[in-house]
Length: 310
Image (cartoon, rainbow, N blue to C red):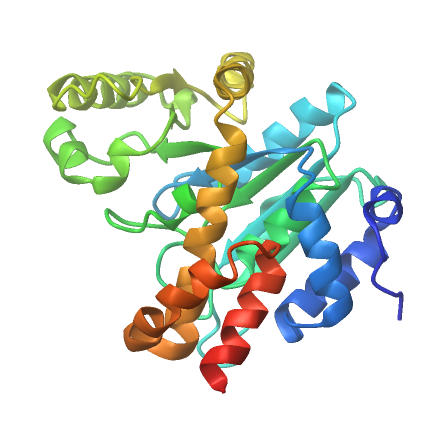
């Protein structure tokens, strides 16, 4: 069994076998001391931009993810993919439907795909997703987190990704229905998938544009880019890539990514506290979060847990 790398220099050259071992440790023993040291280093040295791909079941997220892998690799950029799959009611494990549809060269060390079971967790992601993202963010040029199929209120991906991409399928609803979807207020990019469906794809595009026009204008948030794309024909993929890069550059120019990463870390810690100790535990933890605020993120979580258990 490979060891957990002691530092980011060794992580940068780690192969798939080592990465797989670290991710398995995140799931099986998230408080492992060696893992905690590495994750704290990784959190403070992000290299990747994290994309959150979300949308309802069957919208084509996995096919689009596969196409995006090809775009990144064509530009000699490494990419890590976290695919959150529905849980098997029998075993509790991931059904791996997403991973089956993702296409990549198994010998390519600069593409790593890992599926996680949602384990019935709401929000579209698994409990291990955040830590896995932090690890991959320090190892690859891009990270894609593909959520399990979500509905109107599962918006946890916004607490993980730097850029949220919401996928909409032709024939999935008119502008009024889109207005009712809470998640429509959150993405920076909206992709109408299956552009090759012709007229129905154009209608979906018009519905989404209409929904965005009907929204109450918020001068503090930019209007989402809307792109018609087909992972099969390649239509719209260049425009999607350009929108992704543009949003990344906007965030870097504004200098907001560092603060956003810290805020997401705080949200993750609170979520872990509620999961383990409930809402009452979160209230007990409030002064502890201030007391341990000087500690690195993953060490801080362990310190708070130990105090709550004591």
